[in-house]
Image (cartoon, rainbow, N blue to C red; front, side):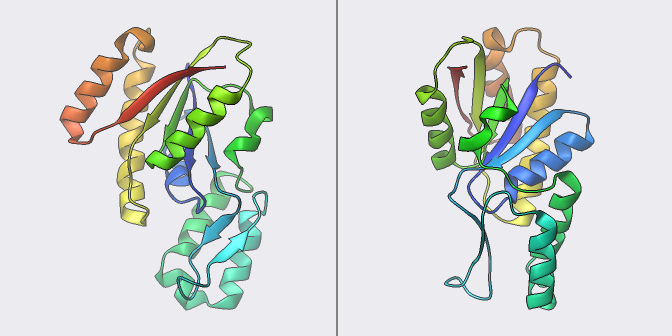
Length: 193
C-alpha cells in the first residue's frame, strides 16, 4: 500500500474504529482517532454516559462495563464494539494530539463537524513539508450497522485511491464516480503538512 490513512470520528470510537478494523484487515497502513475532549460511550440513560480519557485502554473500558451491567452493554453493542477495538489497538487516541504519528495521505471523517475540526487543525499547523493531504467526509450515522456500511464504503474508496497513480489530478473523477455508485454525497478538500 502506498498511502497512509487516518479514520476520524467524534468521541465514541465506533465509526472510525470500524473503518480502522476493516482497512487494517485488508493490509492498509491506517490509524484512527477521535476529536472530542473525552471518549463517551452510551450508559444506562442518555444523561449517564460512560466517559473515559483518551489513552484509557479498551480492555479497561470493556472490563469495567462488563462488571457494571453485562446484559445492557452486550445488548446495546458496546461490549462487542470494545472487544473489536481492543483487537485493533490498545487505546483510543485524540486527533489533535497525533503529531507523533506522522503524516497521512488521506484522512476520512464520518460527520461534517469532525471534517471541519480536522480541516481547522490542519490549517493551523505549520506547513513545512508542503505535502498534500486529502480529507474526505463520508457522512455516517452513529450506529453499529451504519458504521459497518460506512467502513466498507471507505474501503472501496481507499482501494480506488491505491490504484490511482496521481490522486491529486483525478480526485474529482474518483469522488464523482463513488457518489454515483453509492448514492452518497461526499465532502472533500485538500490541505497540506
